[in-house]
Length: 241
Length: 176
Image (cartoon, rainbow over all chains, first blue to last red):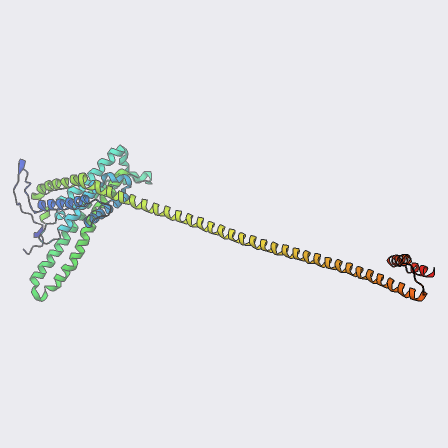
C-alpha cells in the first residue's frame, strides 16, 4: 500500500485466453469501455437535439467539435477534414481517459505505455501510409528539408530518419509519462497525508488539492498536444513541403 | 513499474483497439455528421443573417436618403410656391397702383377740362353781359333809340369783336 505505483497495477477480473492470448478483462479495459460509452453518449446526445439553438449538452459537444475542427484547419488545412472522425475520436478518447482517470479509484488508461504506444505508432504509421499513397516515392523528400545544401544531404537523411522515428516514441512517452507522473505525485502526497495524521497531514493534503487542479489542466493539455501533433504529422503527409 | 509488465500488454492493446474502434465507428456514423452539419448550418445562418442585416441597413439608408431628397424637393417646391405667390401679390399691387394712378390722373384731367370749359363759359357770359351793358350805356349816351335790328346787329358785331379779341370793331360801330 505504500508503493505509490500500486495504482497502476492491473489484475485480471475476467480471464479470457482465446487462441492462447491473454486478453483478460481488467480495470483498464472497463475504463476504456466506460470512456467510449460516455463519449458516445455525449456526442450522440448532442446530435439528438441538433437544433439551431443548442441545448447545454449540444453546446459542449459542439464546442469540442469546433475546437478539433479549428485545430485541423490550422495544422492540416481544409482537406484535413477527411481525417476529422479519426482525430476527433482520438482527442475525445484521450481527453476522457485523462479526465476520468483523475476520479479517485478509477484507472488512468493513458498511464499505460502500451495504450499510448498503440495510438502513437498507429497514428504515425497511418501518416506514412497516407503520405506514400498520396505522393508515392516523392514522400521520401521529407527526409531532406528544403534548402539543404547538396553536401549536407548524406548527413541530413540519417538525422531526419532519427527525428521521424522519434515522433511515435515521443508521442507515446509524453502522454504516458505525464499521466504517470501526475498520479504518482498525487499518490505520494496522499500517502503523506495519511501518514502525517491530523497534525501534519493538512500540509500535503492542501498540495494535493492544488495539484488536482493542475492535473485537470494537464489532462486537457496532454490530450490537446497528442492530437495537435497527430494533426501535424498527418499534415506533413498531406502536404510535404 | 507496473506499466512495463508485458503480461497485460495483449489485453490492453486488444481492448483499446476494440473500444476505440467502436467509439470511432459510432461517432463517424452517428455523431459527427449531424454535429458538423449543425455547425455549418448555424454558421450559414449567422452569415445569412449578417448579410441580411447589412442589406436591410443599406436599404434603410437608401430609403432615408430618398426621403431626405424628397423632403428637400418638397421644401424647395414650397419655397418656389411662396416666392411665386409673393411675386404675384407684388404684381397685383403694382397693377392696382398703376390703375388707380391712371384713374386719378384721368379724373384730374377731366376736372381740369371741366373747369376750363366752365371758365370759358363764364368768360363768354361775362362778355355778353358786358356787351349789353355797353349797348345800354351807349344808348343812353347817344340818346337815341336803336331799332331792334340795329340792336341785334350791334350786339352781333360786338360779340364778334369780343370773340375775335378785337375791340376795334366795337369802336368802329360806335364811330358810325
